[in-house]
Length: 175
Image (tube, rainbow, N blue to C red; front, side):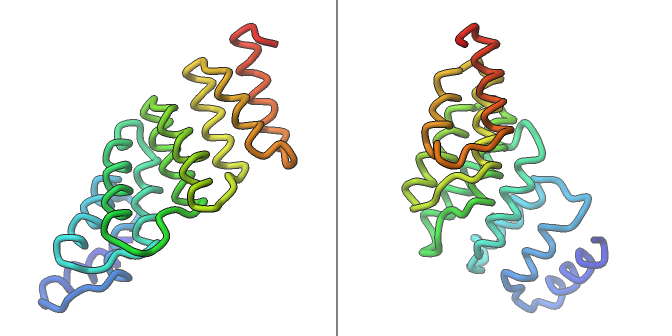
């Protein structure tokens, strides 16, 4: 971790332009905060280094680790979509973005990313994405939305997601 940061700083001091791989390695260093990862994305945009899907995934995963990073996660996701022709979402990025929103208490945004935006991108939510949304809906006591998650792909129901929806309905006395 620290060796990668040392190399990244040495690269910057040498005035050699770092590429996306160098920024990605620095952003993913263990022990760095989500702010560090987000600042790496911002710096890439400022110095015209084309961020790639790994850059976005690294930042979203870092933002998913804390309750207060969801606004930054959404801002980075929006900037990414405006600045690149690369795919906006994949399942990892959607799950990490949804988790950041969920941890921040924003179940509606978690639901929108995991269901609506994935559908727009032509992807089906995986068990992780569905589980994140069900948990967010459960914590916010929105049993109707938790049921919606089951309806999205009722042919491939997972036991854990189904049990979480049942628990959500039970808490709301809707079973």
